[in-house]
Image 1: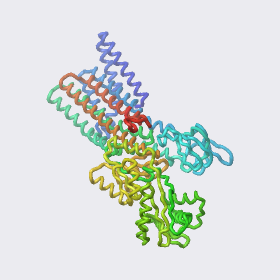
Image 2: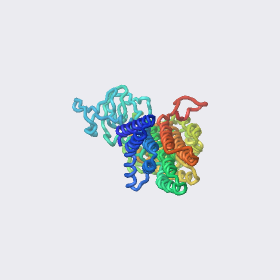
Image 3: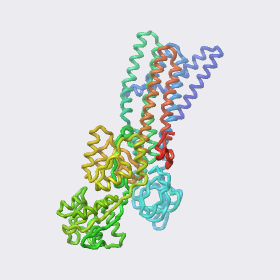
Image 4: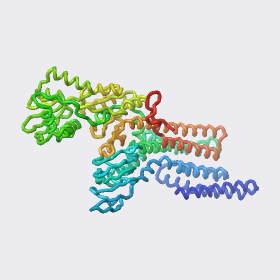
Length: 630
């Protein structure tokens, strides 16, 4: 039954109840009974219809219990009870539908923001096309106030873009040539021309909507248990009501027992909280992939971080060059030429530094080989080059004197990563590279501890001195350096074997095995990263650490809300059953209290829709305030 039709039935049924009341005061008993019976059938038709449908599907529903109770009330002539029960149940379900809409408001808001058309620039002319007709490679023109319709790269212009739909960040991002833009974002001020790279369902915005829809349909462990419980509970109540009838010979008490024991609030107690919590997260750039993930995230007591790109900015810079038996420019040139096809962030940094200094890179590496977690081998212009950590150079017979070791350790103690370069089996030099820690990192670690995380751990392939310096700056409890990917996996296994609930935070691409193994895998800055969206349990669209404590606190608030709802539901049933046994609660009053408990559960869950990180940037007892419920 649609919303409009349902409210019409509610109004008709309620009007007949008022009419019956008037007949009662006018001593027109027959007409009063007729009005009550008609009201019962008007309101009870849809309830009975749904009861039959669910029974045919071999499922026991609340509607079945109400239908049986109403038939019983009509049979014994309790027309006031039958009319009141059907009206209250129908009116309650209508109010539930209306209030439940609020818990899905975040998703509806997202869908409403989906752009429908775009302006295509071709051969100097502009064409407005529907999204379905846009093709990869099209040149899209976007002006102030317009929505970005595709994912792509800016090829002309500059603009401030509101990316709240993707990252949850309300401060517009300054975007210029070569920067990425995403569908669903809005140009606050400026003008850009964008080359379409992803269109339609492939855009980050479309994937967010898809993920949120899937997440809101997925069930938590608690919800799965309650569903199984309801399937046993409902037929159990039918049996108990029959036993009540047999032992008491009181038919009215039996059908009252039937209605009072309806598990309505219990059945919706978990899903309504999950829908609200997941929707809130999506609105704030935090995608939690379902109810089970939400429950697992709330139980996390150890949070493991990758260092580079997670705790640090992921934009390392060359801070020093130390050459032996050659000029610094020659050392940088040959190293950059060896690294030019490397995908490692430190290799790209060296290439970038060479280009920044105007060095010409003419030679491409031959026999290029990567030794994971240690470095690489290459042949450049006939020279044998080894680039990596001290272990790799020693493995290849290149001696490191005590003076060189002292220099490297001093660099590492300053927070640098020392890259050793060997040429033709001799040490050619050391390149120092530093990556700055994120500004919000210290506050994030403290917020997590305040919120209940017992341990924070950093796992990195970097050297021990640099790793310890970063950990000390940020207040991280434990640090493990010079780790290979398989070492990180083994460390996650060990923590889990010790009984900890572990979350692993990375960039969504590196450390994928460790992220996959953790109880909860969290990917940071995943806007536009397909791999992160598909593999991580929690996707943090913004490249900001402070989204982690927000996600953690939101999960705890959601689970806490679920428990509150369960307590309300179970407590209400216990209260009503006690009232029935003591003869204080009857069919109509019991149904009223039952429906009120359902609404209380829904309204409690709606509080999660307004859950937000209060006082961003404010201080609370010297620390950044953690998220709280409004």
